[in-house]
Length: 64
Image (tube, rainbow, N blue to C red):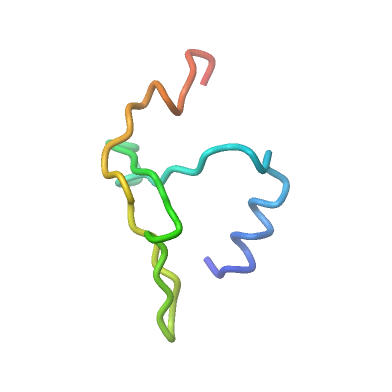
């Protein structure tokens, strides 16, 4: 995914929502993202979890 594609995907979201990053495709753990957890190199933008474990109850409701 390119940065422009991520921006397009996120611009229709509620701008006040929190953003979390999944540890893997199955959602076996989630981390938070902060400004200091985003690194830019000459080839890519890398996002690391700032806090490596976030309780799923903070992310999902029973309706999800």
